[in-house]
Image (cartoon, rainbow, N blue to C red; front, side):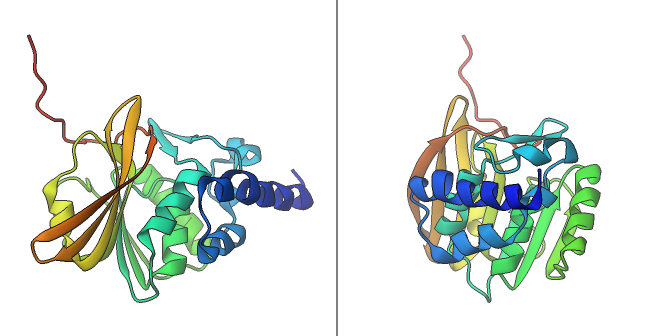
Amino acid sequence: MTELNLEQARFNMIEQQIRPWEVLDQRVLDLLARVPREDFVPSQYRNLAFTDMRIPLGHGQVMMSPKVEARMLQALDIRPDDTVLEIGTGSGYVTALLANLARQVYSVEILAELNVEAGNKLAGHGLDNVTLAVSDGLRGPDEHAPFDVIALTGSLPVLPGYFEQSLKVGGRLFAIVGDAPVMQAELITRVGDNDWAREYLFETNLPALANAPQPERFVL
């Protein structure tokens, strides 16, 4: 794909996929136009970087579709002085988007191979406000808590309570919760020391994070 075609594909992604999905925050739209998504997809899928699909990363992991990434960023309303926790570094693309908006991003990836690849891509784009770690992000509260923003880039059948507890007052958490084929994208805001507001954003379907906790299920 030529450079001209890449730019046309990027423009089409924003105008035909993302705007119609109620993403109207100009900061988010400008960011998606500026950060080269094609640099973060696996090389064999470069020509599909702007399509409305989940792109495989190997190891059963995927990149979210562009419109879901955009809705997540819009909902989180990231500010320049925010500290962000991302669970699931994956390709590093969402990490790059978060880093362009926030003061500091801590990103946790359970797969060392993906962590290394993402680290190289982020370094290549000069993003020095990202701290990467190879770890199970679902093991419990992160040592850098509390956070202004928490972004979970895979789904969870149930959302562990420590994520909500890891938010500062005023902090926002994005999570996709439920079982296939229909899951709910949720925005949870900590509005007080012991008070959280929950907003259901849209329905989607996304592979679960590794080692995702399972709800108790009734078995006959």
